[in-house]
Length: 308
Image 1 (spheres, rainbow, N blue to C red):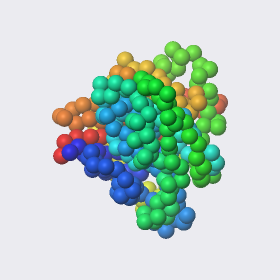
Image 2 (cartoon, helix red, strand yellow; image 1 turned 90 degrees about the vertical axis):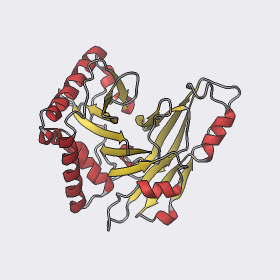
Image 3 (cartoon, rainbow, N blue to C red; image 1 turned 60 degrees about the vertical axis):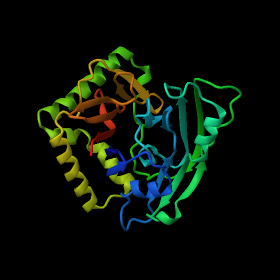
Image 4 (cartoon, rainbow, N blue to C red; image 1 turned 180 degrees about the vertical axis):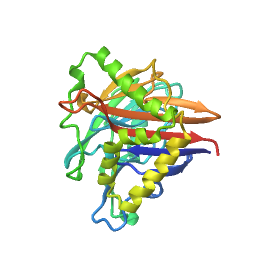
């Protein structure tokens, strides 16, 4: 059994999750979602659950990557979605399924099986006994097997009015892409050097706005914020090599061109760092506000796995 540590500095919570290949269901949703604020009413948590196995997939919400798997290396769901819901109303979820060594093609039977247990769920006020499926994600039938298939669905959701969105961010798709890569890599390297030199406080200052959005979206109490900050600082200080060298990386645009992340080794995470049979996968998303010449951290994700 592998042990997973998942952290999203945006809206998701600081959670330790023990994962196995057991079937995921509503009971798993209850286990993974332990971070809504006590006494804050109403608190709405949106989640996506699936049972996609043995084939590659990418899952996007509002043009942000929220989960992926290559050759069965993905972290099991459910995934909390609040961090990528910026305004109330229609949200867009997209799933891309791709063949791999285990499955040479995508068939209708395969998609029907995936559709059985894939959907968007709503948890209100920690009422785990009444989790609601608000959108069933069903794939249409295929006329013939394909190497890859993508489908998009819409669903309705509510968001806090004070959450920072990309409305005031520059369109990075209009920049010279070589210049963009140089600037993004320089910003990433600055964050990396903060951690390598033991300056976790500097790193925390860089992610302060993203972390503020976490607290707003999740409705964290002051006590929960304090506990979160303490755990995060200890984790960063203990993993000074958390962010690897990404000189051979490429950029990937998200948020309809207004956000950017780095890819390495053809993966959809910003990097992987293996040490003593342990692995850190890091996912940093930047944006550049209008009127600014500097990139800022928009969202940040850490996935840590290791032996028991």
